[in-house]
Image 1 (cartoon, rainbow, N blue to C red):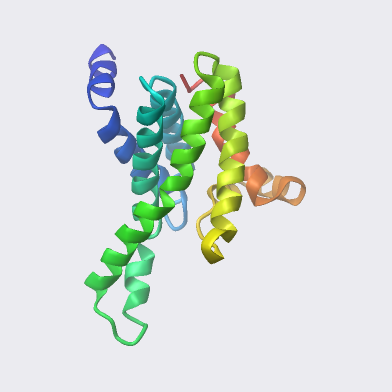
Image 2 (tube, one colour):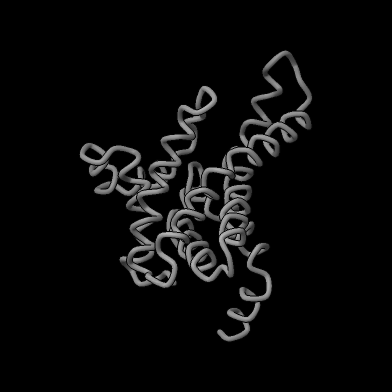
Length: 187
């Protein structure tokens, strides 16, 4: 366990990018939602342990890059159906789009770090609320990009999907962000 902690402390940015990519496996068709929750916990621990606001932002941005590149890779295949564009061009579009979309988790990480530094309960609540805000902003800023809201990871979970009637997709996203704290997984 100490080797793992040492590796995480030595390479927080690479781990954040990797955690972001694995977090996207909770989306269909894989539906590996426990892995999503675990990677969110790891990411939030990395943000809390960041040495500065800049490091917290960069940790959030790298998580977002990994999350969106894996979660939106279907766009590359969709490119082949639009005017017979080559699939490789679609992968370039996915990477560029992911570099932009990653700003939203980065902003959530920065603000949660600022609000909850050294206060885990405040950090978790701030992260859940800020994720909702940044996910909502992502849905309409610059004409919006609503695909892959985090809450859709919870839809195959039966009772959790039923909760969406009351809290909506943004509420499900907040629950998924707060879930690691509820099970004692974060920080």
